[in-house]
Length: 192
Image (spheres, rainbow, N blue to C red):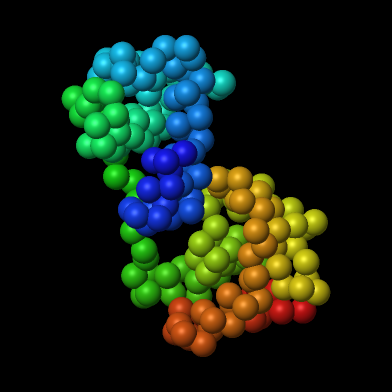
């Protein structure tokens, strides 16, 4: 608890990061059981990161996240003279950097203004204008869209069900980036 309070208030980590740390540290406490934390070695931290999850072995990204969180906890505790070992040598798997690169405006316009079906234009617009991920796009249904409020509500990656105020987002895109939002009102039909 003290570590999470420090991470939130002193290190100023985001609420989402704090939530992820809290979840990982809870799993770490379960994994340790009655074993004292001062006995933990770097090999134990690697074992924790690579433990089998509910759906099988973890992805490299999940294992890396868990190992980094535990290394950070041990570093923090060691710096404050808690009886723990530093576990910096615990190796976390490398993760390929797959952050998508934004499309150039001219590439987007070539696609957006091509001869697309209304359905294709709708799904591309959801991804481009609202930043929805592929998995979110394929799971959204008509019941998730509230035309009266101008909102979409469905489970996002990470579990959030906060509504997406698409009407307001369209208006912002149209105002700030009118050159990439050509014809959005005709094709998306979201302002009804």
